[in-house]
Length: 474
Image (tube, rainbow, N blue to C red; front, side, top):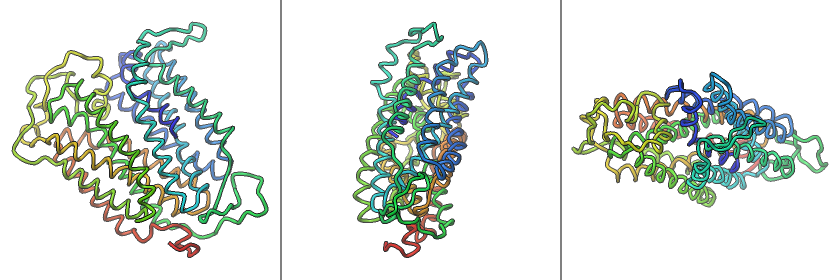
């Protein structure tokens, strides 16, 4: 998970300038499709790889999925070679990288099958911490500085027509990490399956079985709890995806930050939230033993609600209005792709235009500003609530499913998360641009209240399979 996260995140910062370089017809709207194609690919692939892992050794779907990602990264490095339609080659490459990332379902299924109920939360938290650490280090300044030193021209390997520059070096490193992953899977990973008590049980994914293995316990899975957990997971990822998306335009509108300031300060804030998430994941391992996963999930949702409630505009102080016609120098607010553009465009454009809340957004004239202390407090609270809800939701999910192979179910859970990461940015970009932060964050608060209500309704059903069937005491 760590190597995969680093390989994915180091590419993010270079997509927009690379897209502009290889195809002049590519615009911000197409960038939105390029970004979304990763989640679309993952959403399609997750149930497929999950189903595969239910009946075959998990090494197979893991190796094939990572190989697809490696091949897709290599395709990405060559998208400048064709004479035309380069942007579509990039779209396909990113979609295939996302397709390969569908192996997350297999990984979670493996962890669920290889751990007892007592070990499950700790193992899931460790996995999430490794993933979060990879996302922090991937786009960090060390990697980006090294890639920037290569330059746009870089060097060309004429024999294979490979140009190694600041845009292709990240994907080539990602491909190398993928190959390293495959080697580790083939040499280190072994099939292992235990029941909820930790006893070795018959492994469907491996033909050889020892005589002292117990049979997989039989019983029906609580489908209501399964559906409810999928909804909870969708909402949790939906909310954080929209928060990630709105950070840059919100801070530029509210605090009149320049594009360069926004990327610097927001990058620091998001990196700090990543560090905070790692700490939360470690703390959850201890806390869950005392209060249980359901209580942490409920508490996390309440903390997220408080975070977004604090983010609502109050008072009589208004943001600085940006009166000039900004053309392409301001943060666009119409499409997901246009909002994302600033993350790539800012470092290259030192001719800063006017700052403030664009007058084209009518709400700027009557909506109070969100004070910096409000925003930072909200970010800290969301940074506490989101990782807590995230790891607890799929930990509970794995316990509800029980000791049977969970590949297909984990596939649907991952697919719901991918859908959330597509729809969240689209939702917030449209609502924020049209109605402003008061309506946007009020709707989010309402959504969280409904989610808490759903959790309250199914709270007693979110119990482990073995507990539900009376084999283990809760």
